[in-house]
Image (tube, rainbow, N blue to C red; front, side, top):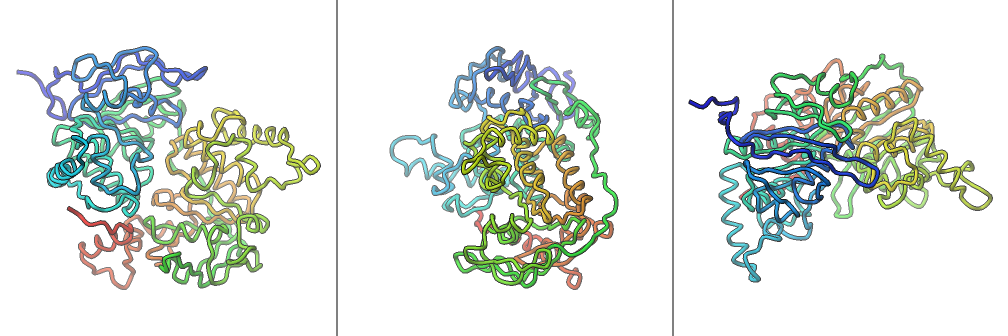
Length: 542
């Protein structure tokens, strides 16, 4: 009799995927070096590592986006020649990228058949896909509205569309690259339920992530990469977050935020009755009242889409609003020509936006150019009437060294840095300006464990210097760890304020769903309905 492993697969079964001796270099940079890995069928196999460790490169080779310089790929025991993504799809491999590959003004159905049409007549392909979606929704709980435009559905639903695209092409092996980087905690939990269901149906899943909680919660096996090499492969049940973090970074990593109690001073930011109405006439902020003192972090918790982005935008000068906002006692213009990022910086406000790629950087510009944005009028950057580019590059090099940006090359374009190093560039630009008030949105989104530790240390250090910090994050763990006070937003309003040591994720979750102290007797169904509304996802299901 053949023995079975923990997932019920025969121990002698051929791996779903086996990579042998994979190497890949981009010029002088060795992205992958002699990597070998085996992924068993019907399992969820995690691959973790710091940003720039080579995880995405390795999976891009498996999916045919890159060609390895050396090494072999085996699918179900047979050698495969994967020259492009079409060859990968034909081999039963599907990939869901961190940044979705969807056409926003196409419907869900049109996106799913795109590139997999049965002929020049679209109607038969659309009808076939519609029928298939009903079956996939039934089998895996992947409910979507086929006729909804992608631009009108939330990111959680867009990710479902990406998964459905792969399954429609009959993928048995699914690669997900940082799948929760753009999801709320509730959406991430739903994704995990879907992945568990896919696994129970025999699908093989490779999960690329830097989040140790996700690895411990959902994977069966985990492989660790560091600087282009595979350092270990272990059974998830036989390891711990601390061990994995040390394998990833090469040193012991502090998995909690080490900080002393805050000693708040004078009020730096004072907001009264702040309102924002969007261009469709929808009220996004509905009378916000809050304050942040010197030497404290006020964390804003909430499901994405409940006004946190608008709060940061109006305070940062990107969005008009009404109400009263004072910084160090001085009234801030909320409309007109004086309401912009430049005027905010002059008042001592620095802003790390939620989306570093769209709002924090120009991806095609070099690092030194990006570190000057917004501060190009600084006398230190001037040579007469012209900008002193050499001085800016030298200053950028110093910032990159202090913030451990890798590689420390001021002339490298922003798009060529990993997500964590892009975030460090933005943080270095804003924090080094010694602001009185730091607005910071999603500080560690898509960032690895080593960079998270560093970023958290910088935020705490700024607080300890007596600066006021307004922190927006969808990660409740992060909010609880960094904040000295927590305000919870729902539907454009502040639902309540809590002290971190006097609350927990359950209480905050209820406030995020719009459930206050006075109406805790709501049913589970009502809470779930509120959470769905909080997520801003109005799409219908099949």
